[in-house]
Image (tube, rainbow, N blue to C red; front, side):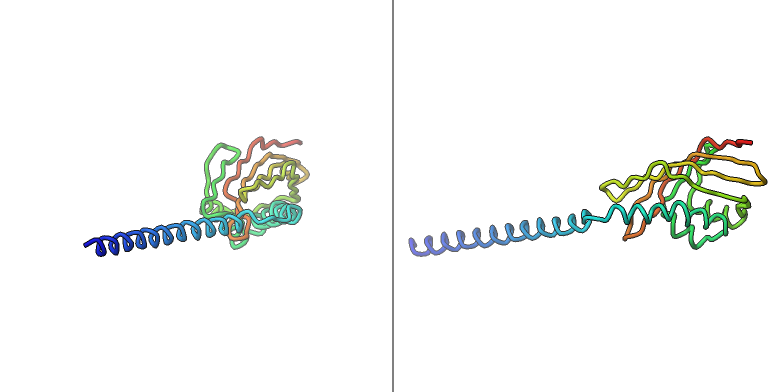
Length: 170
């Protein structure tokens, strides 16, 4: 009887040690997997290169999409969750913006966007804010806008825009 209790006790200790080892292994590998995933998100980026991409997107591609009624380009720029607050305080979304450029071409003589703030945050988010300068029939207008973009799958996507202060100067 003593021998069988000793065998049972050893078996229990062995089983407890084995279960403990398995649990610790799972925890260890889970932590390593989490660190691996986090390091993919927080990889060092070339801030200068990313700012150049964002500057090109805001100063060249975005105006081009509206000017040329390029819904494919605008679709690439705007995230599926894109929302916009217009100068009139109305809310718009990606579908409405795509529909808008299909119907209405921007017919201004000249457009230039002056970036006054371009900042990349640690969580793959960027802020672009500045002034739009429009010339149409020798009349100058300006407006202010701010944009929030998120880098998703390696591509910057606009998720929020706000336009205000549209003013005709002459």
